[in-house]
Image 1 (spheres, rainbow, N blue to C red):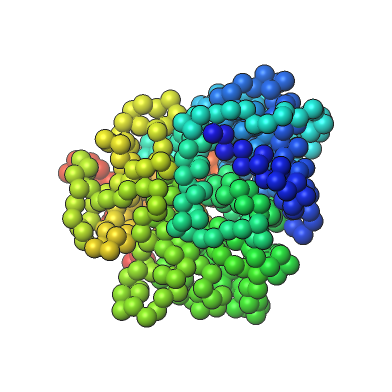
Image 2: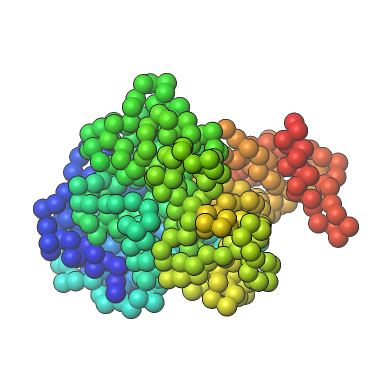
Length: 501
């Protein structure tokens, strides 16, 4: 079934229910939301988009993001959301790899694509094509799609530094959405979902379940994260749910304590996407009350691996509450979870190994990448690349990331990708990139460099090739990099040197 059927049904049931907001201003009710998506679908079909074709969205958060998303699905297409923070060349790679037929942009980002010499047809929200599309006679209903058909291509970097397209099916989106009600939180038509984190990632993946129940969708006027704006919108709407990276939670707590804002109207904050330090979540819960829920997932099993309930986050009566709160909860309803050795052999409770997951929320593989798919999927199990421990009650604690992933402000950064850019400089002989703890962002990128290139030169190079959030915040000159007997760089020693100052 096409996941867009949920919008179609909601519009038929209650067309006048408020749906899309920009700040406090209502942009569309569910009837208008459906009509605009159906018109856009009709225009896409007329433009040659066939079922299964990829259509990208390179946009900042705004109500039309959802219209574009559902318009693509109504037409039977596959949506390819691209992080609006990416460099134009990075967006170009995604567009070329998935063979996108068209890309929607928000004002200003069309220029980013033009500078990268993108040849894919670009439709800007402020342009005549988009205005014309919304005036096209609508399709009667979403085109039929099978549960195993592709709905979403989520591009996530790999250890080689080249992004891989995670294939997300309609069945996966349904499984994740329904598991939300069972394992994460309740949601009704009286609630609002606030998009303060990028809709191309976790925040956007929660839109479907809120469409299903007829909740309101609120995009901040800032198009991003601004703590005072969040508090104002929550107080106005009264029953706000939102997804947040740990760094966002920490910054919200600091702002609320400084300004005296109680967080009125914040009903649920689901946090994930990086390490949440125990002291930070304890401080946040002490100020805002029992509004926090943690989930653990990754692009290959989006939002759907584990959940730590609201009660578990706020419980201080158990003697092991700190250990529970430092973990990421128990397996969600739609998946099996286990800890395995490097070859997938199950390990007993309490022993550290690779986190493995399988179920309807797991990907069928990577787009046009059978080698990477075979490496990630073993006998139906997704090998997450994350290391962890399961206790006897089924609670999971993350211990390490076997793929050297750096998570800064909720965004994934793979060191190899940054290293390859730095090695483009003729005065760099060797380089190794690691993460360093940061109070606000969780981690920040640091590069250890062998060579004579200056920090200014390296920073200019990185800014010309990759997104700003991936650029190192420090360049440490070194004579040599620590290596083992096989010549592999010992990143553990580099991290230790940072911790020791």
